[in-house]
Image (cartoon, rainbow, N blue to C red):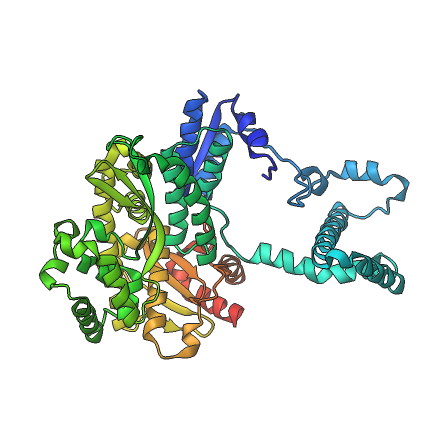
Length: 552
């Protein structure tokens, strides 16, 4: 669904109806849902919330309510998206429009020709805009050159040939790769801002949604910094009263602030030592799975002049004199040890004097609640718990999520150390492969897609830091973990190469499909993340062989 005016073409349309809200099992989706819920409550909009973890649940829920669902499809000239009716035109309509000029070709051929015309028009508009932007005052010579080229190469075939290569590139990028755009929560907050109904809580949910993308490496560093700049302006607008002594808010009010904080997971709710050991960035740089890495960590702490007694107790219990300049001390020592990105742009939220959370803390807690291995509730129960933890009235659930997140981070680093020390990461030629066996400690923690994806990304970063093979540093990773012993299935995830210039485009979704088709492997592509699949354990070897030959 493409809309040019989000307020008129989306919100005002659904505002007068009962809304069916499908929400994915994703922290960013939960934050977008919270913002929409707040807007619906403001405007007294009735809605039904349905959590969906994959395509099967979405299809089931859609079929149950399909009589009440209306699809809104609108052409957007600015985005250069063709209208729905132009692409999927019925054969009868094609014949009516073609009249006597019809050559009796099949509808599929007509649609192909129509698609080519649309793409050609789109490319012409783009080229014209680029030429106008680049030429400036030299627009007349450019126009003359275009006219000359049209005389030298007349007819539609030359245009079609010239535009075929860019068209192929555009379609190839769109169909072959998976990548993420702007956070859904940020889009919903922009809607609330346009409606003049944005609140501090909504702003915080937008921040958490963006941070979720950064924590899971879904967007580039440049995209993250750009979006942080956008949200920082909203933070200044909403929280400027805290800087005015005459108009200060009550300490119980929500206060959001921009911070240049440490890149350490949950360190304010943990001990500094545990956070250093279980943060992917520091664990990979120090190589903490080795004896030499543990010695480097001790040297790092000694360089800062922090006693082990202080470092190994809870951060809140550390001496105030040490905590005052802790960020600067850690950054200075980190630079000496080759960690140039020890601090990052982020936001924190305060509830009174006692409760303070970084945006990444909330992401880890919410993700752990949603993918909790506890068997005392269903997936819907875990979804509701995670959704509730985002409200400031349910801080007990958020703290419970933080404890689960600590267990998850510990298990992640222990599994990474086990994989690297036992050489489970092997090169298959075009990609690296690692498989977790049944009986591995905490293996059930990684049967869920988000947890396994995060483990795979952290494992790849650690492997790149540990290996001396230059070729292996540039390879992607395929990782498998047991899903169900009863059904004999495994979860397989594909991770793109870990490079500084990585654009976060993942090609494994289409590669998995083709490998499964060529070998008749029993595969289920149920998750919204196309690079995550469920596969029969019996078909794993032939599936991997096909994947190797496909990517070689």
